[in-house]
Amino acid sequence: MIVLQSQAAWMRQETMREMTGNSRAISIAVAILACTCLAGRSASAQDLEPRAFSNAPVGLNFLIAGYAYSSGAVLFDDALAAALQIQEASGTLHQGVFSYIRAIGLFGMSGRLGAIVPVVSGDWEGILADTFAAVSRDGLGDPRLLFSVGLIGAPALRAADFVTYRERTVFGASLQVIVPLGQYDPNRLINLGSNRWAFKPRLGISHTADRWTFEFFAAAWLFTDNPDALGQRVEQDPIFALQGHVIHQFRRGLWLAINFGFGSGGRSTVGGEIKDDFRKDSRFGAQLAVPLARRHSLKLIYVSNVSTSIGADFDTVSLLYQYRWGAGI
Image (tube, rainbow, N blue to C red; front, top):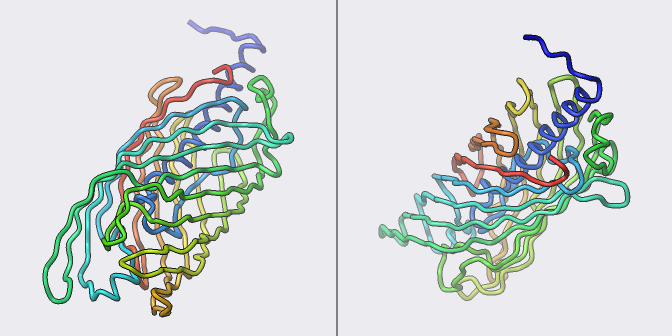
């Protein structure tokens, strides 16, 4: 039987399609932040976060829970590892990820506020002063706070206003903050917390044409000092990063993103001595979004190292569940 919809019903359906698509934008942002958080120990230049500035109805809420697995050279302070003659270091990291995000309006512009909390369990091994050593850690990692705003092309809109809104070109800015609340012992090389603040300002632009979205982001990681790491003060220069993303939506709720990023910088100073640990790394990522129901969806995320001069060389696979509510959905 063919059902002929009224114009009003069709417009409501289009509104829900827009809201669903934009809610995925926020959820994938949280997912990427979560899977690359790595307990906050070493802020990665490559968060590989697509669709970070897409619009969403004011008042929409997102609750996300999931699991992330990382393996390789993860969660190490490279400068201290070099000073202690750590060699052939590797580890596996299991993270439970919990996050909340809310879409807000700010002086007529769309924005979002969010928080991410990782619970971590990890095992590491390596050669310390010519002797094999292994260690395990379990506990709370450093939480992250997120604020972003769509400066151009993403106005603050209520649900009803999304009937006529179509996303095209969006220019946005964001700030991410790592808060040093995770598990930390100054007498340990490997910790789940960082004992320092980290800040990531970012600017980005995206353009959507039909089912394709193309994005480019530029960001920097800025660090405060760690005053006590094995009895020494650790300083780190900024890390600068560039990212590109290509996203294709197959149908409502089902889409795939391919991502690539490059970062450099981050030279360390330990106890007043400048270390030879300037970083250059590139990473590749892919994310698949799969809808389950009106308010429920899953995200499968993969991030891998392509090349690195020093530092984190690891692969991460994440599976996250999202529930959304509010804004009349």
